[in-house]
Amino acid sequence: MDTNELYVIGDVARRTGLSVSAIRYYADAGVVTPAASTPAGHRRYDVSAIARLELVRTLRELGAGLDEIRRVLAGEATLRELADTHLALLSRQEARLRSRRAVLSAILRQGSTAEQVTLMHKLAGMPDEERDRLIDEFWTEVSAGWEPPERMVEWWRAARPQLPEHPTAAQLEAWIELAELAQDTEVRQAVRRELYEACNTGVGPLMSSSSMLDSFEAGTPIGQAAMDAAREQVPPDSPQGREIADRWIGWLTGIFATPDSPGIPDTPEFRIQTADHMLAGAEWDRTPPDPEGPFDRYMALVCAVNDASPERFPYEWLAAALRASAIPAR
Image (cartoon, rainbow, N blue to C red; front, top):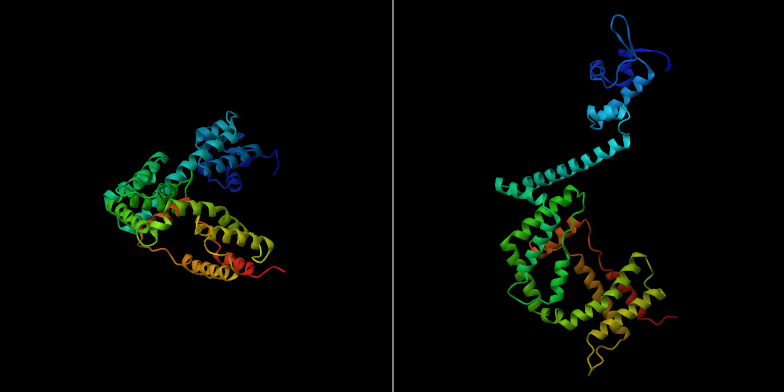
């Protein structure tokens, strides 16, 4: 393109992708004026004007207004400042669109009433402090009327939704369902019954006792070491695998030890039996959660909101390490 040549408006339209009427409009609005005009009033544009029109087209496609474009072309504002302003605007628009999509998806899924739609729209835009208050109220009611172990209540309360600054539509949908669930009186009562029975029937009293909870906490670092080793693909029969198996067995036999009894003896047979129990645990862990179980649904929705699935315990890896440790190392 010749820098000294002047181009008729039709050529400019072809080069910039703008319509002739748009080019005339920008000229009349004082955004990009022609470099010259013929005696008959025909507009002529030089290379600089064409480049400015290409910039105008780009900025308009990005959502910039004419006043903003005039300021940029006049040097009163930088492209960086314009981009920063519009990026913030787009972020707000995206958040609103995600919120609307989540509400509309929930409407289609549930066949909601007008009142429920209003509620869902409110839930989608709920501030962080209100979300926290809702979850706290949920667990306060769930633990009311009985005395669950304090540490277990702390664990339950710690599993709470944390919506990011820019949640996806799926996260918002999960939050709407979770918030509706947490506000439902029948659901709260069902979760209370479920957890009460888990803590007070069968082996529940033993498993939720203070001494057993102490033991669980003491075993957490060993379980984490097994998870790290499995994730890093450490061979179960390696020295590190055997060391973790020894720590696990030491922790497990210590659970049942008393001042009057050393507890279960550490034998090769016991290690193999424990490995079998680990494999049974793996089978149980693969069992899908009860879709009708309100507590399982609560936890699944928390994971969905947080976009994080809990890391599975490496039952198979630990079983292999226990079997390997039952055979004396050569």
